[in-house]
Length: 381
Image 1 (spheres, rainbow, N blue to C red):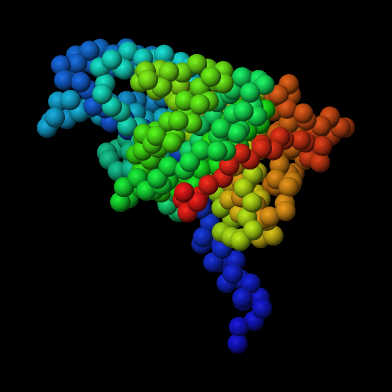
Image 2: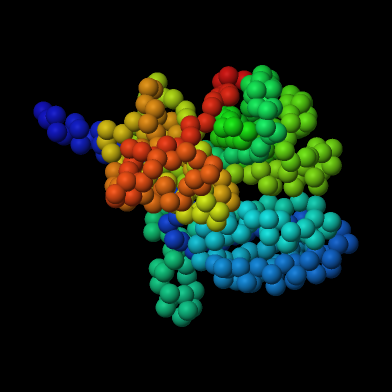
């Protein structure tokens, strides 16, 4: 006969097996693979642009090495691989304005690119590899849930927030099925002040899904409608201008965790964490630790959490049990965590509680909850 304690143990083991944890913060070495399709006749121009870029990236903190390869079957296909000490320094660089300027010479000679990022899990080789052993390797394979998460963020002109929210809430959902292997599963759109955040969940190929959505007339109509309200001008008829806008708007997911539980009354919320200048990645890492603590608690109301970060913009997208509002406090079990979090936040962009004798108390920390504009699943389309 199964005892109560055995049933509880089985439940906890089952929940643990369903947990998903994906993060850039485990300290593993990073391998970046860039697939490049060069215009016919532009190989020499591409090579010169690469040499210039290579010289510049060599001085970027965290960069280890890179390699340029050309296809033996199709001379227009090239492969660039680079190794980094870990993911955070690469992401800090690749999402910076310096990177945007560095890669500009490539645009006139490249037809298409695709970037893939991998943590190193296993390594074999000669004496050098043997000496390094497991240093910098990912400790164990991660278990995913089949979804890829990404977000975009941009600001609109102050005073236009209500008009923009109305446009964004009223769009017709595009066809969710991209192809036999890719589907747009969920789109959640939030606003805080004049900042817009659009988070998407894709099953399959993220890049294919983004391109699919961009081609849909109902999406194009919405983008055109909000164009006059954007703080950063864009011309969707100019491919280069549109590419630059969406490059700067990209808000990559740097951490995702689930508690292994589920709930029919799950509620989606988004919290906005404006970081002090240069502290965005540190803030995202602290929130990742906070989520780990929260998801390990068997009584947690936290079902899923994704942290998005670019520069000094950090957004925490969470699914919690319905009726739970104090999301910012989840995982802040130690006063030191609350004090560190408050230290990394931009006080001018955020209303934070005043410091007490022992620093900023967790109960006095206020993080803005973004306003939900629309949240649509594939079944809602």
